[in-house]
Each structure stands twice: as structure tokens, then as C-alpha cells.
Image (tube, rainbow, N blue to C red; front, side, top):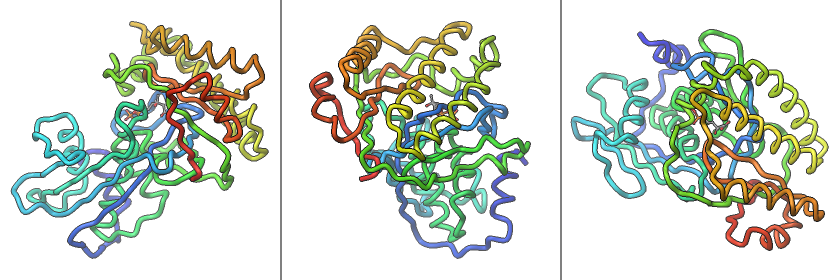
Length: 331
Ligand code: DP6
């Protein structure tokens, strides 16, 4: 039995739930303010460090799940049935393999993203989180947030943080089976917080996060400095959130993203996601800040920039970034 199957079996032990005819679930996308970059176990998506994100409220994934009448999985995305050999169907099918009660049990999965695909927010986190919730509903297990976050992690690391709204911390954990590597929602709400997506390029990135972080762990000599940096950034970010100190939140998040991109650049062969437009957007943020606008940014494994600001400054931010798509994470 694979280690991932063993984790599923441990979590479901004693949960003889009542199978339902179908289930629906929703999970929000999230954007990390302190990033996850590097695993200590690739099969279980166990991270080297903790991370902390903000969930994106209405931007996320809806999933409907039922037992398929056909002798194969039927997988739909945004209203279209996918070919069995498409990368989405393959990845979803491999995840569903962990949960089939019998080898001939097949699923009908209908996924719909409200994350605009071109907005540069990853939909894999909300996708696997909503799928874990839908499985819980279909089989009637009644799992806790902690257990669901462990199951979502088996699909994608960042999905661990997509089970709750608001600020979510993913604890790295130290156990070999990852039973202590789960997510928890922080108590603080911050209704004035805004995240802005600046779309500079909607093309597929040259190196995916999965392959990129593996390459950084294996070849970047600065990687050994990363866990210490993350520990400090996590402590500072949690203090900023508790005090609602926005400049401190922005400073930590932007610095952490730049440190991750520095690691990527020092990876061999190098990984550079920034385009000339990305650097121009960063410089615009810095110039706006010099002018007194409290505006910061973060970036993931791609060329698009996400702005961080407060509601009172939205008009000012739009002057610098007229095309920005604004999300209110706390509604
Ligand atoms: C840069 O969660 O996509 O967005 O665990 O291999 O599925 P896998 O990787 P993934 O990596 C996300 C990396 C990141 C930072 C973050 O979200 O914390």
C-alpha cells in the first residue's frame, strides 16, 4: 500500500459513513503571504516549512461528485467533459484512486472554477480542497477541518490551506506520515484587506511549482537559509495580523515573496518567472509607496503580481493599476 493510501486509511479508520447519492462542495482559492517552497516528502506533499495564506472568498472551485453509472470516471471542467488522457483528468483520477471503495467504483466529477483562469490565481488549491470536501459529503465521513486539510494536501500542498476562509496557517509538522502537517484558521478577521490581481501574462508558466520547488531544494545552496527566514516571517506576519498593522503585513509578505524568487533565480538551472512587465509592475508599486500610498505586492510561481492594500486606498491603487481585479477576502 502506498504511503498516501495509508494516510487515507488512518484518517478514515472507524468512519463507516453513509454513502450519499451525490455531494457538492465549494472551496476558496488562497494566496500565500508567507510561501511554501520545498518539500520534505514528495508523495505526501509534506513541506519543509510552514506557510500562511489568505483565502479569496468567492474566487474558488465548486465540485459536484457522484458515483458514475459508467465503467470509468467522467470528469468535467467548466461545463466541458474532459478526455481521459487530459492532464486535469489524469491528476483528478489519480487523487480519486486514493478513495475508491472498490476497484470498479467510478466517479462523476463536475468542477467549476470561479477563479478566472487568466487572473493568475492557482485553481489547484481550491480544486483539491473542494474535492476533499465533496468526498467527505459523498461518503458521509464527517471529517474535521484538520483531517480534510490533510486529505487535500495529498492532492496539492497549497490545497491544505484552502479549507477555511480568512487567514490560514499550514503547520509544517515533523511526523513521517504527515499527520501533524495540517492547516488551521487564524481567529482574526480583517474586512478592510484587499487583494488585487494584475494580469500581465496568461500563458502557461515555463516550470510548474512542483518541479520548480524540487529543483530549488536539490540545487540552490541558499535553500538552507530559507527555513530560518520563513520562521521569522511567520512570527512577524502573525504579529502584524494580530495588531492589524498593515504596513508590517505588506512588508513581510512582499519581502517573503522576493526571497522566494531569489531562491528560484539561484536554482540550477535558474527559474525566473518575472517578465519585463513584472519588474515594471514592482517598480510602480515601489514608486506609489514612495508617494505615500500604502501598497505592497506578492507573487507566486508565475509572472503575475498580486497587490495588497486596504479598502480606503482602492481609488489610489486604480490610478496606478487601472486593470486591477480586486478581491475582498472577508466579503
Ligand atoms: C509558489 O501547492 O502548487 O504558490 O504541493 O506540488 O502541488 P504542490 O505545489 P503547489 O505549490 C504552490 C507554491 C506557491 C507558494 C504557495 O502557495 O505557498
